[in-house]
Length: 302
Image (cartoon, rainbow, N blue to C red; front, side, top):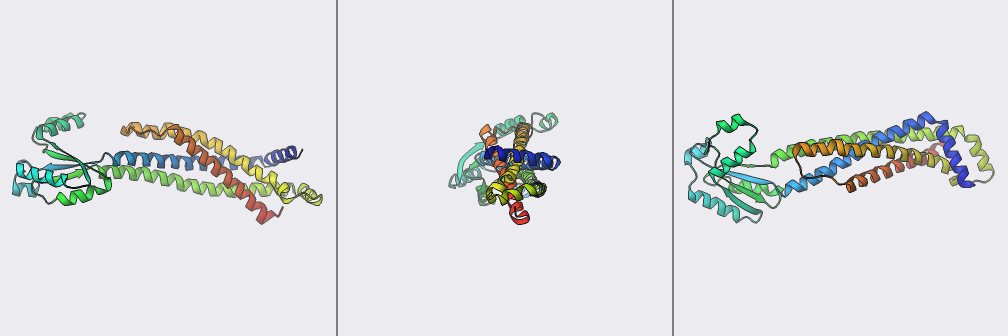
């Protein structure tokens, strides 16, 4: 009997303030969608960072007869002694996990493969224009600069490059998207909390006669407040369920497309998506519940 009464009161409250309830659900859904998308982007970025941290390589280009840098022009092409000294120094570093020497012909073949789509560039480049080099793998991407600094002044080195700079720019872009989505989401969640507070206040005001009678017959505060609190929970749940559809859509239309553009062999599993959906639904319910509770305790004294 009591459960039936509570359910009927929830339905009456939602129906009396239908437009406000719809506004709350839409606001909660939008804010949770942005929040969930931000969490998904964060997980994707973390997986990509972990993937690339294990694969970042340095390339140490050696001086050739055609090198244009002032160091190479003054000292000439790298000698066999220079190459051996550089290799010995690299292999002596504990942070270096692998060193591979790439001779001229192999370096040119690799260049042709990488720029196969730019025929003009490949045709304008001849074998010997691409310097022989060392491909160096490091234990951690944060140690690239230290290794580079230690060998930069050695004889026979033309230049040193690594993948870190390019990847940092890409990850900065994804970080910007993530923080942008989360910032807008928190603003929207604050707006949703205000909306749910006003909705509960209007609902309580329209039923002030019923709540007054309940208090006179000895009903407890919890029993009187329960229908109003559950109204907020229902709005949060509906907003969370709608947001779940947007989160799934963001996963398959945004993140998977980014992965295909950049050919990353990393895909977030359904477990990650369900985790984000669970977190967003719980967050939506808690925000609506807390906003309802504060409204009842501080303003209406039901």
